[in-house]
Structures are given as C-alpha cells and as structure tokens.
Amino acid sequence: MERFEMVIGGRSCPSSSDEWFETENPYTGEPWAMVAKGTATDVDRAVQAAHTAFTSGPWAQMTPSQRGQLLHRVGDLIARDAKRLAELEVRDNGKLMAEMYGQCQYIPQWYYYFGGLADKIQGAVIPLDKKGYFNFTRNEPLGVVAAITPWNSPLLLATWKIAPALAAGCTVVIKPSEFTSVSTIEFAKLFEEAGFPPGVVNVVTGFGADVGAPLVEHPLVKKITFTGADSTGRAINEAAARQFKHVSLELGGKSPNIVFEDADLDDAVNGAVSGIFAATGQTCIAGSRLLVQESIYDSFVERLLAIARTAKMGDPASLETQVGPVTTRPQYKKVLAYIDIAKEEGAKLLLGGNPGSVSACGNGWFVEPTIFGDVRNDMRIAQEEVFGPILSIIKFKDEDDAVRIANDVRFGLGSGVWTKDIGRSLRVAERIQAGMVWVNSYRAVSYMSPFGGYKDSGLGRENGIDAIREYLQTKSVWINT
Ligand code: NAD
Image (tube, rainbow, N blue to C red; front, side):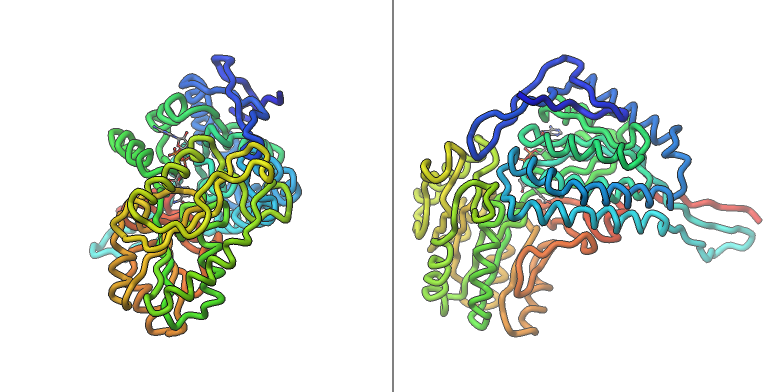
C-alpha cells in the first residue's frame, strides 16, 4: 500500500515512532494508503523548524513583496496540479469530482489575493494628545501558527488559514484530520517547489490526542487556527488560554434556510436541496433547518421532494454523481443514529432514511438523502449538528416567528432568506444571529468575503481583509522628539 510521510523542515519524513495508520476510501470502505502516525516528538521537530524559519531563516529576511510573489507562485502550482489534488481528495474523502475539480481550480485565488495583500500591511501614524512625541504602529506577524483542520474539506480549509498566515509573515504547522491527511501532504510539497524556504510550511499527521494536543500546547506556537467540532474547539481554547495564545475557531452550525411565501419558489427549492445535500451534507454551513412559511408549506414540500428524490448517489469520481458517501465510518454511524433519533422524537420521515443501497454504491458509507417534515425546533434533530444528508423542515407563521426559530439554537454560522421583498430581506438579515446571511441564494463563499460564526459557531473570521489581522499583532512605537 502507498505510504505518505510528514513534511517537516522541507523534507518528507516518517514518524519518530516509525508507526503508520491506514486511511480509507469512503466509496469502497477499504483502506487505500498508509499515513505516518505522528507523535509529540514529531510535533516538536515541526514547531522547531517553523520557529527557526520564522526567526532566522531566509523567510525572516524577505520583504513583504517577495512573500507575495511566493504566494502567487504556489497558486500557479496548485492550478497546474488541480486535477491530481482533486483526485486525491475524491479518493480519501469521497468528495464529488464534479465539485472538487472546480474547488481545486478556485483555491489558487486565495494565494493570489493574500499574496497581493502581503505588501499592503500598513501601520499608522497616530495624531497624539501629547507634544514632543512621534508615535506610529507596526503590524507584526504573530510567529508560528498551528493550523488544525477537519476531514470535510481538507485543502480548502487549510488554504483559508495558510494563505493569510503566510501573507502576514508567519510560519505554519498544519495538522490535517487523521481521516483525510493525504491531499494536505501532497499540497504542502508544492510550497517547497514554489521556493518557500524549509520550515515555513510543515505538516504533522496523526491523531488529535497524539499530535493535535501537543501542537496546541507547544510553547513556541503563538497562534492556533482551528476548524472542526465545537467540543474540540472548546478543549483547544481552554488549553490555549493557559498560555494566552491567540485563537481562531471555526466550529459547527445548524443553519436556518428560511423560505417566505413571496419567494421565487423554483429558486428556493433548488437552494434548499443544494443547501443541505451538497457535499453529502458535510459542510459546516449546511442549511440543515429548512424553515417554510405555513401558507406554502405543503406545496413547497411536494416540490422539494420531487427534486430531492432524483438525486443520484454513486461513485464520487463519476461526473454524473450528485450525492457521494459519508467521509468516515464513525460519521456514517452517527448519521444513521440521528435518523433513528428523529423518528423516535416524532419527526415525519418524508424521504430516504436508509443506508445507501449496496449495488449502486460499492461497499461504501452511503446514506440516502433524507428529509424529515413536521420537525419542532426543540427536537434534537433541529438543535444538534448531524453533518450528513439529513434535512429537517420546520413550519413558521410570520417574519417574527421565522426569526425567533432561526435564532433559537446555540450555533450561528450560515443562514438563508428567500423572499422578493427587499425590506424583509434587510430586516431579517439584521436580526439573524449568524456570521453569514445569503438572500435568495445559499452558500456563496469567496476569498474576499469574511467567513465565521456567531455564538457557539466560533471566534474570529477567515477570508477577506479581516483574515490577515488574525495573524498580526500591533506594536506602538513612541519617539521622544
Ligand atoms: P474534530 O473536531 O473531530 O477534528 C478536527 C481536527 O482536530 C482534526 O484534525 C483532529 O485530529 C483534531 N483534534 C482532535 N482533538 C484535538 C485536540 N484535543 N487538540 C487538538 N486537535 C485535536 O472535527 P471533525 O469531525 O474532523 O470535523 C467536523 C466538524 O468540523 C463539524 O462539527 C463541522 O461543523 C466543523 N466544521 C466547521 C467549519 C467552519 O468553518 N465553521 C468548516 C468545516 C467543518
């Protein structure tokens, strides 16, 4: 079986324990490669390499424009290798080729955008209230960044962290999910090819307890940027607080997608279906609570079912496939367990509700696109993040009721509003407690626009100009004139 090593200090290397773990293909349910099982010793080596690169290597001497040029170069290499990277992610993660190829072609934009920002990080001259002083500020990189990513979108989510961190002048140790390490390892090698000095981008692979926790606790790591489950985010935040480390957290969601009676219903139906079933429901912004106004509830649900019923499950590598497998075996079991929970709670099963049929789907971890109607917002299926192809439909009376239900959840990541009334769209957008509001669309994302959560969905923002601030600290310089 193919073996994938870590990337530390510009070199591929096995684990210090010389141990490996299997990574599985969700479509076949079989292991397809071995990945180095990292330890705290490997974490220390990677952090030391990143620290040396930050403090004394050629990276530390580069001008911001030179850093920007390297970011542009790595963007070009990612574009060159988009197909190969997409294929790796399809195999390791079960993502659809139809989605991944486009995503890997889009990822370079983050490197071009943040590469362009690298030489625009400016301080300010402060007009003081005191005579005899000149005061100015400098924005300085925080230092070694630990970037910890989940399994659902390895390359995209790593990019959201790496591109602004490098533009700011930091160095990075990436810890991908143990379920989907391979694409990140291959990706990291492109940074060396682009000319980044050794140690600027490192990858340690392995399990949360073995490498994730030691990385968070390493005293030379100054910033942790994490995407994953809120329970893990809480543990990381607590550990980081003991050393006053900077932290950004992108956590879960239970996003409301609200359809008012005056919406363009064709658009809204399509937005509701893709809002939940894209990436097999395994996105933090999945529109997993569909709020439908009671006056159109029955007809809207009928149209929704007619479209959702046609979704084609199958081989993620085939461009025909619309719904791929669940990425991990534990997640597959979790999704099926939530179907039972919803049934026990009295939600009405309208579509799906079973594992995917084996003949169409190899032996992989498939769950049929599943829709529950008559869901109450206090049910677990409406409050807890499932992270799978399960949609809960909830009825509402009017605008106030919609906003109340939308906000009655501990998360606050995405949200959708479908209406032709511009006043209503603005009122609801203002009242919704969520980091992103999409009006008459769902899940649009860009390197230019801030992304992040309210409430238990996280801290800090990725993408856009805001993102670079997450990797900088301000120094105020006073000169007695
Ligand atoms: P997870 O929290 O289990 O794992 C995420 C990463 O953290 C993995 O690399 C894991 O090894 C590591 N980890 C685990 N324990 C750790 C510890 N104690 N210290 C340091 N690192 C540790 O999450 P997951 O199951 O891989 O991903 C699914 C979750 O990610 C969902 O809740 C989803 O909503 C969330 N997510 C959020 C966003 C967002 O931007 N808000 C995007 C995608 C996914």
